[in-house]
Image 1 (cartoon, one colour):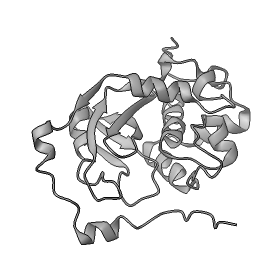
Image 2 (cartoon, helix red, strand yellow):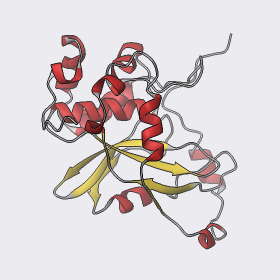
Image 3 (cartoon, helix red, strand yellow):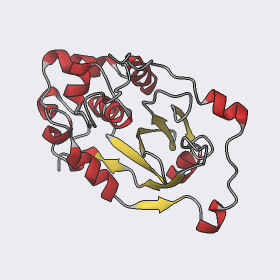
Length: 216
């Protein structure tokens, strides 16, 4: 396990040009702005889990792909490369990169929607941070679907070749995140009490940052 505080270019296996991008992203706010600007990965050719290199090269990313870019940039600047997996029921999971300021957690998040976005570093625990996503996390049937969150997953547990420079999709990372310990957010008896999102919330959820490509 590579527990270096700062990741150098040789640790990550990136080219000078690739590493220079991460060097410029020296604050969480800059990282968030960068991954917001990357077009959404609509997985037109099938499901992906792109490495840092491939996401930078292809100029597209979905949540886990944006999270690994963010984590790599944080590591370059002396912060641990941590991910948080948010697990949902009858819905897709969501992955964010974690950072801490003054003992509180914040999150860098790649999403194409008006919800599940950046979180300021004001949350005293990972549970608090995860709960901040609860109300907005819903499926196409307008049901609130977030059920659990993982422990902070340190990417230094994995060989950078599996998530930074991998040419194929990084399914090993996805499986490792899925297998990590998760903690429940609500009890089963509380599920029955959840209200569907209302009409205004449904309209707000239609907002997108990047438009999908036209078919044909």
